[in-house]
Image (tube, rainbow, N blue to C red; front, side, top):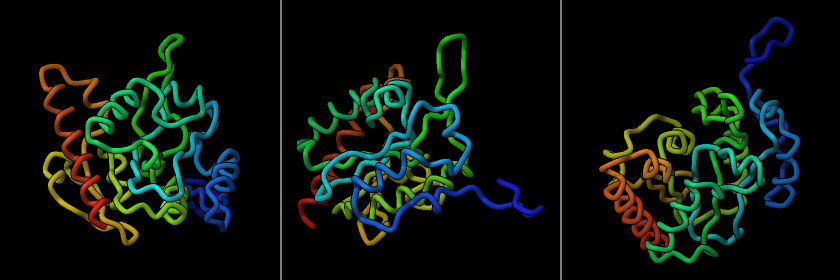
Amino acid sequence: MVQQRGVSQPLSAARYVPATTSLTALAAAARSCEGCPLFADAIQTVFGEGPRAAAIVLVGEQPGDQEDKQGHPFVGPAGRVLWQCVEAAGIDRADVYATNAVKHFKHELRGKRRLHKKPNTEEIEACHPWLEAELQAVRGRVLVALGATAARSLLGKNVPIAASRSLTFTVAGSPALVTYHPSAVLRADEAAAEIRAALVADLRRAHEVATAS
């Protein structure tokens, strides 16, 4: 929360979001966003990337260490898993717009390492105007929430991932599916192959829904 004349105001990026559906203009404006404190410790804003006519919109949690350094979404270890799963699901990467619910890397220092730290509800909601603007600009035929944070941002509520995978929600007039974040594959041990298979299956279902739309 921020204080203005003694009144607490919710954090929000809304004032930084221009009234446009140009992805280029939105990405440029996002570079100057200070809608929540996360910008102060991140190297840069990491905006979504992909074609305006994308059939599928993938929404993750937040950029990681490599994404923050390189300025592009899903270029780190979890990103490599994601794109492998996208290919395995028979999806052309050119048909995908990929973004995150939160545009700055939230982390804590452990020596020289920057360790991922989960965004809280206030930070997710503060960044939501950017996601809304992206969805207005892209209007993908199907949305896919990768993990709990993305699901919270897209659906406006917390949902259990495992129990929600078979469901189809509606967000901004588009069908929305929920699945695991690719980082779950990296964190798992014996269950890694099972989670990867589930992610591929869910992406394949998203492709089928998009194709049928």
